[in-house]
Image (cartoon, rainbow, N blue to C red; front, side):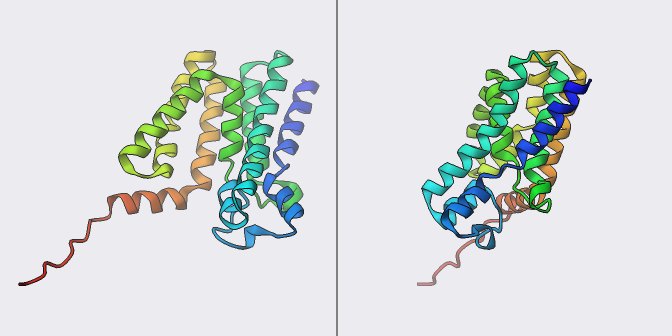
Length: 200
């Protein structure tokens, strides 16, 4: 029990390590004050360039990967791993170290999947590419694929508790990105304006 509490605290605090904050210190530029106002990799790339994007994405993905790999090495139960995934993502989104103002948690969540299960990664990539191609929207592609991960997770681990916790993680990701999702769907379903026909 005590070791699980240690895992939980470590997972949340690890989530507080924001790649965006580190790159802001290195560049001496708080890029979250510009662009989308987000501390994540996409905004870092938009404001500071591709190297900043790669750095932030790598840091945020790695911390998600690290917590899961560590727990698997310690033979932690599936439900404990799932709770730590929730906490590391929550730590990224609401970091106590930075006044509870963090990112959207996508890169960190993807990092956890890379360490958790090849099947989850395969489904996420396949669904993302297919739906993004059809809708021409990476936002719709990513978030539309997420619900299917709950079923794949259950097939892999056979733990209702762990899969239920994963569902909470996805709900958190949806909540944080709700405005982006609304905009993406609104743009996708917006009627195509016809250009006026020139009279000859």
